[in-house]
Length: 252
Ligand code: 13P
Image (cartoon, rainbow, N blue to C red; front, side, top):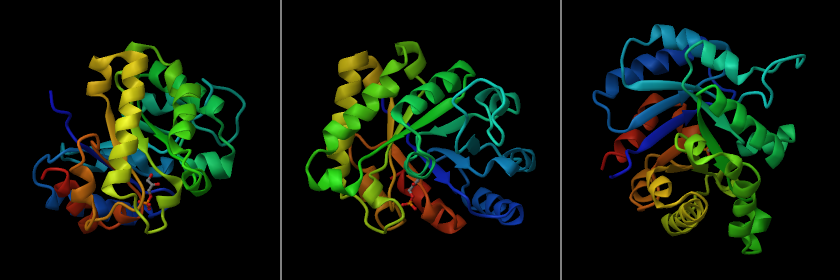
């Protein structure tokens, strides 16, 4: 069965509530039918405001992060259980900015995945290599280690609802995107590793998104790769019309 594409807007720490509400209204007007699954990842503070505001049925909502533990004395953190309790569907786990600026290790990310699936959130697990690793030609070993130390701790039942996002760090916010060939090569490698660990049924079903300077003018060729099942979009998701163009590219 063909995998349905998923296109996600990771707004990171951008947009005010007012700007986000305007984006929502614009995207809803432009996206008249479901070209792909579309998920929006706003800042925690107004996810539920946007969910309440949104009257359509084309968009799903997610959080950009969650804590690695269930609950407790962790000032400023938000738990998976809390996200689930307000009806949030998705959660991004292991984004490279969390790894780089907040010291998240593969072990912490493993714990986050566990707690997220326990509360029936749908994780978008991010992996990807920095530039120096790509320059050494060791990107597959690097990504495999991220998979082994975090994702592969999940049982077959737990991984079934995970989405993977391959986000080469050198392509994030730099304007330099991976070529379709580079993206396909890594996506097919990741799918092959999933197959080895979990079998063909799961590897054939799991969605692998590409993230890293994906824009209206390069989305279609990247999404056309057989193992690319959509995108996790940063900068280009902030403008409603650019984002809608990217979603449309997933339907080609
Ligand atoms: P850019 O699209 O801005 O490169 O960001 C990609 C990303 O990090 C999405 O999570």
